[in-house]
Image (tube, rainbow, N blue to C red; front, side, top):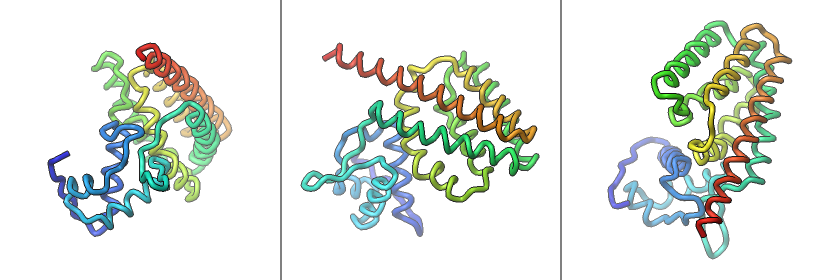
Length: 231
């Protein structure tokens, strides 16, 4: 933590917040760890004011909790919260897929097919290694969310929920199997959107996220069991 990482921007607190979000999602700042303002201010070479603004933003995103006389800490993932989060995600992203079937331009559809071709090539070249670490899965979902055209839906899914969703996905990425199944589901969703079949797109998206939730639950329960055995 001794290396100074220079941050220069008109939106300094936003830049710091994004750095902290990425560090928390990647696990560089561990779950449950205390957020040390003096240490982070030194690391980024900034004053405490913009840093506090960034921490408030992280608190709003659900990545950090603040307790009197304790300060700010990174959240600790748990199965109940994951299930609640993914239940919301299932409903909202299903709606986004239905809206995207009416609103997505043909050029955007073509771009998404190209993205899925890249995901296929990645799996072929890397012995089915999960491409979650490449950001590709999030990119597919976020493009559909953006194509919904619903500003409130976009804000909820792209900003208020997705940092925590990314954190859950990265936390269990190594324990989830069969990335080709996820890719097949993505292609089916995109086919429905391309054919402007909104009801089908919503159904397939909801099934896709429900399946992801079940797999995450299994992975988290397995991880919790392994840690309890070690203790």
